[in-house]
Amino acid sequence: MELVNIALPKGRLGEKVYQRLKAAGYPCPSIEEENRKLIFENPEAGVRYFWVKPSDVAIYVERGAADVGVAGKDILLEYSPDVYELADLGLGKCRMCVAGRRDFRDRTDRTLRVATKFPHIAARYYASRSRDIEIIKLNGSIEIAPILGLSDVIVDIVETGKTLLENDLEPKETIVPISARLIANKVSYKFKHEQIAALHRRVADTL
Ligand code: PRP
Image 1 (cartoon, rainbow, N blue to C red):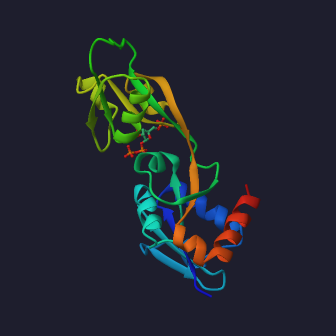
Image 2 (cartoon, rainbow, N blue to C red):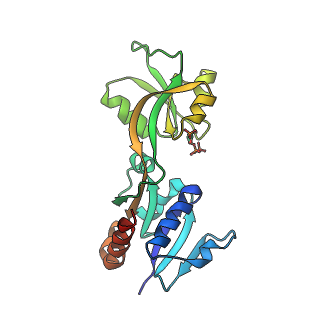
Image 3 (cartoon, rainbow, N blue to C red):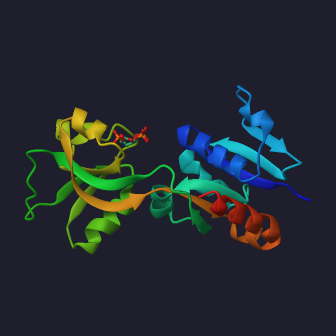
């Protein structure tokens, strides 16, 4: 039987996801050894795992390099990959927020400058409220933008709120709650249906 290829997001979330998959009957002893390898397989359990950058999981799955994967809802909303979203794993919970300086007051007669790693999510959110904005696309340390006057607000992920607090910012509006999702490639879902459906069912049973 062909292995199911599973793209895991590298990092803390990925470790938790692997533990969930292990509990669901898909262990892979080699992945638990400390090393720098990126691909691991366990033919007995029928799986091949690989670690990829969290924001790349959806690309691997969309293009079929991975049959299934785990991606944050933030990535799915931002890139709208053509994949099936099978389950909410309830891990990596956080929210997408608008945040700004505590003393910031929105002046609706002006274009709002929004710094973000998520230009599509930000654009859709403000379009739905008919608010004119200018998007400033950044790649990290978004919190600095309003402090230095690069932007009026930011659209970013808030988990504990600590990063905002420590940078004298506060959440202003919640755009959408975020969590990790099990996703599948559409062609794989047809041709490896039994294996993927079984994995989906067994993971759902551990929720
Ligand atoms: C995210 C986000 C915030 C931080 C929020 O960054 O961009 O900076 O987490 O977490 P908190 O509310 O618990 O403080 P991440 O750690 O994903 O790093 P990145 O900005 O490099 O992607």
